[in-house]
Length: 386
Image: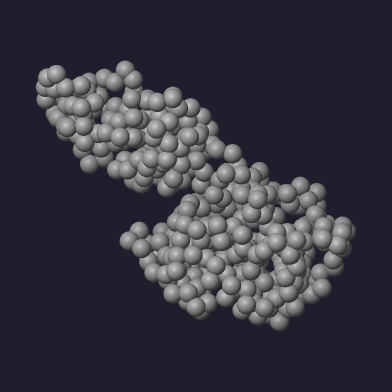
């Protein structure tokens, strides 16, 4: 074969399209019965394509991988993502937070149009099982097959949502040929909390109006109390600090000072219960009051309670399992690939998407990173001649 792309997610499809534009004859190989399964799952929540903000701020979201990814993201910026989607017949809009979505708020029309435009041969239910000397080894419905390809792009995803195709089974196969790989770790994930029984009625409830902090980072966003702990946008915004062991602190009244709260709490409550007193004085009720009862019992009063409401420590018991994470960090390290994302240990084999050792928060950064690295790898693979 001339060119093989392994993995039919966003990075792989972008690489395939770039190689077809370069004149390559491309075969896309996918282990699952259909393409883009995780992409379609993302579309169920609206398909956040990218983030409309100044490029330097956008780039900073990639943390320690910022310098590595800069040329790739510069070559395929948020405006380019919007143009790409519109070129596939999917108009987009930008929400108040800067997040960009297709107007239809789903992924399937875009994916159908994209697959049609790429026009490459696709072999489904072909699972890559590693290298065999110069060949690629696959398990197929017809049994094991060995494939020789002049150029290959690996785009098999990270290690989350294995049922959709990303299981990181590729990691030892790359390590076996000398590729430097960082351990796969969860990213954009929930964290476990050992709740007492009284919290059960609040499972699924959003906690709004809080300022969350962990280490030196803050986020003003809602999160959700779940059976197993906490999750949602506010938690995902702080996942790196929390993953590294920083404590999670909630400011339940970010628009009031401790002194403001203390002054209000100093008012006599008469025969009212403390919970009714707090509800009337501060509007503290529902899941927010339940959190206070959960982690601050016995609940103090006066200035001590004011301080607690401004800095409520929520004890975490570690991240939720890897397979539940929205995305993962770790993977093929920068030192293991060329500037064009070709494996130094195996010339002619390129890597893209979440297989690479970068991570980013939710909000459009993940998908843009996958598209940009896929395009970059595909262009360099398309031009490569061994």
